[in-house]
Image 1 (cartoon, one colour):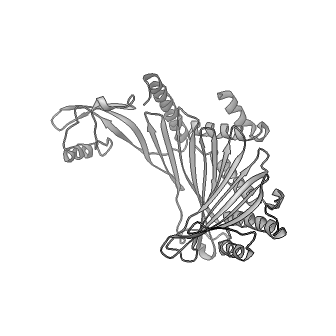
Image 2 (tube, helix red, strand yellow; image 1 turned 180 degrees about the horizontal axis):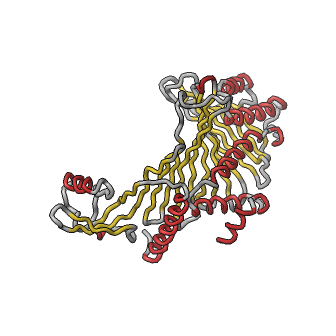
Image 3 (cartoon, rainbow, N blue to C red; image 1 turned 60 degrees about the vertical axis):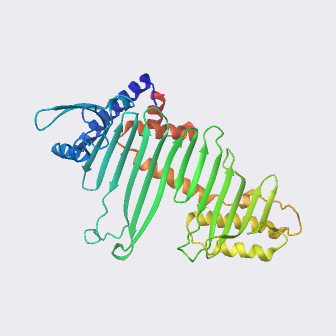
Length: 392
């Protein structure tokens, strides 16, 4: 719970953002409807739900009254205080902790905003996907980008989730979707491209790559779950990594686990763990190693599968080069990081592409500052850098 001083600061910053958004979207000449949520009222508290709904509808659902709580339970100052009038002139004093702007439509997209008295702000933009009959066949792919963003005015943290739909093929019959996100939590920036997650520690400038492919009972073409992790140093050079492959029986129980570990200090190791916990050194049993290779090769050709397969191939090549050694040397340069770097670049490029159209100053400020912390000063566009330094 925020103390009284922080509550007032949060409220001031939220009102400031709301004013800037109104000014920004005013240039679009867009209209929207406003709703008030999270109501506190001693006058309404205790009223029957049916009566609350009738009262709410009399105001065209402009004020949402369900779940009303007494004033003593409120947390923070109200974003809006109103006095509602009943059918016979009776007055109901109400305080609302959240404001939403809905139905902000244009020809290409639908947008909405949410502002809360604790400083939490969210924004969504959803592209309207045209039907095949309305889409002109220009020979080019149709790209639709939608996203949802959240942040708090009292923190540097934020989250931006993006969905990119690409429609192509004859009569635009094929649809591909990429999930991209860019977020900050404390001293960690997380970049996601589909199932590739890149964790960037702002204190050490090190990165951890994680890919997780869960077992799906309904998909009988794969009977395994794969988890890949890799740690990079401050120069993006490979330090250590592992891939864990769990195979499953038809009843969903784990049948066995293949694990590959690589590090600069210990070289490469490859082991199999049976369901009963028996450990088998794959260096001594290359025939079992071949089974793990088969599991990886049956996966798709997605970017994340290429990363996992490349890592496994590099590890297994080290095993094949020296089957008689207890610990196998591993040359980190054998592991190709191109797929990881490509995924990271797609995240950054997508965020930079949409950043200019975000109507929330506080959000773009946080994104710019994260870029500044992740990269040398010269890598940030001059106009973005100036805004960040001026604010800080």
